[in-house]
Image (cartoon, rainbow, N blue to C red):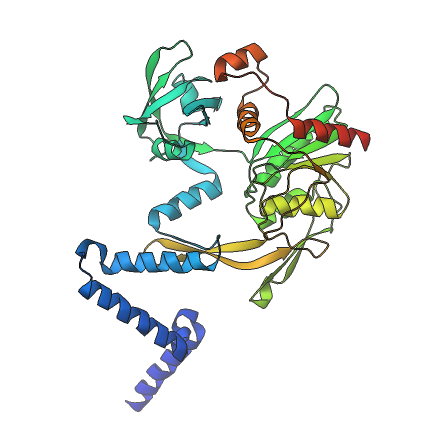
Amino acid sequence: MLIVIGSVAGFLVFACLSNPSIRVWLNPDYRSQVLRFGEILWLTNFAYFEEDRSGFEQLTEEAITGMAKSLDPYSVYFPPEALKEYYENTNLKYFGAGFKTRQIQEEIVVTRVNPGGPAERAKLRLGDRILDVDGETTTGKSVQDCLRLIRGPAGTEVLLRVRRLSGEIDTLRIKRSQIDTSPVDDFWVDANGNGYIRLAEFTEKVGKEVGKALEVMQKQDMKCLVLDLRDNPGGKMFATVEVAGFFLSPNTLIVTTHGKLPELTLQFRSKAQKQRVEIPMAVLINEKSASGAECLAGALKCHGRAILVGEKTFGKGTFQQLFPVSHDSGLHLTIGKYDLPDGSNVNEKGVEPDYQVPCDPESVDKLWVQRDRQGIIDPDEFKKLFGFSPIPDPQWLKAIEVVNRDE
């Protein structure tokens, strides 16, 4: 019997020491604070006068949400539905209808229809105004609000009521399916050899997509390149480093990371890429270029590889990790910071452009629509579709000016 008891005790000690979630109970301060929280949780549930606001689960969710929020702007607790949406956005795979919209004069306007997608098959067209989704009006709603209404389980249908350019009202029945969105929003080479590539985000497949785009562009007598990172929120660090390899020599330092855990102190260096370009290069940035986008732009600037044009970036110099937790939830926690090759950290400072070119809010909205449009549209046709004539992009024009001067 003593042998059995000793074996069980030994097993329990081993389990406590090898499992961090169990081992933490050996910390008296941790136990004290958990008991303190449990006491407040019980007391609130027992005595608070509004019963529908004092359930154990509801109170715990609110407490966890507040705790994460108190740390920094990027530490977030995700309840089940929010976690599901996070995964969809991160993987750029979702069940939707295959089109893009922008808000123009308080209307939700279709600015891009994916070729061969469910929206195109249902006869949705550029310039259509979306009036309601499954009977729910879009009036007063943002583009993101409408997107949540449109997305849903694969194989189900969504009803869109739209106003055509002719003024005719149509109801379209669109079958939701998986939409694989490329992180390369657009790329082309103009008649003068000016190349352009726009990255929406740094996802797992961005390296492959950039390589394919550059392979096509290099066959079109490309003389210089403009990389558009405006409104790019960042993404996966390894993807950022992978893209850097297309523009920098192998083994070039891109970023150094630091965290509480020693294993988070790392150097990330570029790797050889088959489609590496060495032509003159500019990078477009603005106040919504963040995290990985700042990392790439900053590294290219530090190494003298590219000229930065536009506006100061957002200033996010930290990185996060998503920890799945119980109840199908997740904790998105800041675990470290990154430094640029020159040792600077962009957090709350941003990356400064070499050429400051501001863009007023009205022009920003119009240029968003222009960048979303499919192919080259005749100016008169463009105005008919979207209600305004195309305007010059001052940041693009400046980038072309300086990059050709540098050639």
